[in-house]
Figure 1 (cartoon, rainbow, N blue to C red):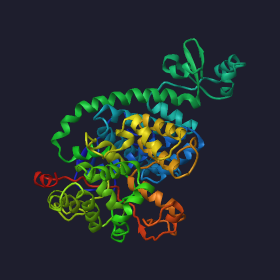
Figure 2: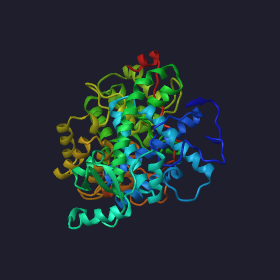
Figure 3: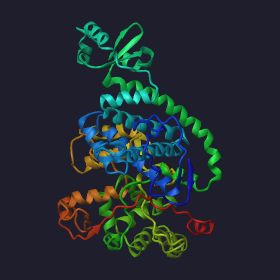
Figure 4: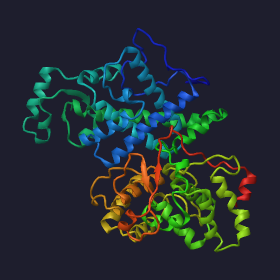
Length: 517
């Protein structure tokens, strides 16, 4: 794959003949692409496929795979991306459109393969999501399309002849666990290639072959796909150091795994001033996610925050509407409990102004999303930043959850998601348990992608129905109960959807870092 600097409207030149490289829209991605694309297209393809894989992960965690609800939710999420016609075929496409979609699918897979080959954890995540996406897409295919897919990939799995199928069906008669497979099309496969199905007694065995019902053929294909992709990821990781010479691609690839793809929670002009320094204490108890509650509690206790905590917390407060003047007031009031005003002005006020774009690069920085908090700069001794579900020890996390009034059963559910590495789902479950949305055993209906999303959703619940779809009301700090909070003074905050950009890193030079120690 080659990269240019100019964007083109089409990734391909149209042909009147079928592109032999893409005989079927479902692929095993065995051959790398050779097209030339611009850096802009490179990034767009990566981001759009990443949105799909994130949706596959989230819905797969919270809903049973293959169920009607799972398929409905995944279709809805994919339809919201630019890959909807690559993965969900709702209309008859022209040959040119079909080949275009297949190329986008092909190239986006290989771009993310570059981004996610860098570590064992990233490879595992990418592999699992691609397998689930393949399973979902294969199950949408018609019988004829599945046969075409097998032929296009030189897979020698063919439906058994009618006479043999009738014979096999007679032999299966009386086998209760296979009766639901009778009167269906079978594929004759060497049993060594269907060990998962043999282990679960889902197939009939005879003469060294497994007779696989068509709906279970995907299990064999997934095993093949897993083996090929796992090997390819390892090979790609070995070749990745050769890309270090290209300063354009490597930073982009490294940032993809931590990229936030959702709504922008940066402060807009109309947001400024909706939260004051006096309101933060009550808001922290009512609407802050656990990560921000932890930083806030540490700040109140020690009257100090180290650099990473100041960035994470300061940008979050900025995102909920704390103006620069109120931020200076809030941080000065707490810091000066352990130091004099001159020390605060010399060492810490610069950092606050920097967050608001008044110093250094004068960039209007946006709050950190969950993936950035989880993947970036883990907390060291004395730090308060990070994700509690990722960085807290299990027993300490249990204690913190219990202190929030979560029942033992609720704590167990949250810890189950945490132990599985599903930190954002655990945060969403905590949100539901602390806001009285549903019971302990129900499925999680949302996933927290951003601390400011948690705050915004909490405020919506505390204030009841919102008048407009893009309005959030901020609760006054003067009330002392949930009911009185809902009746307090309020102001509106409007939100907008971002253009697939994550918040900027605070990339400081040595001089600026020294000023912020």
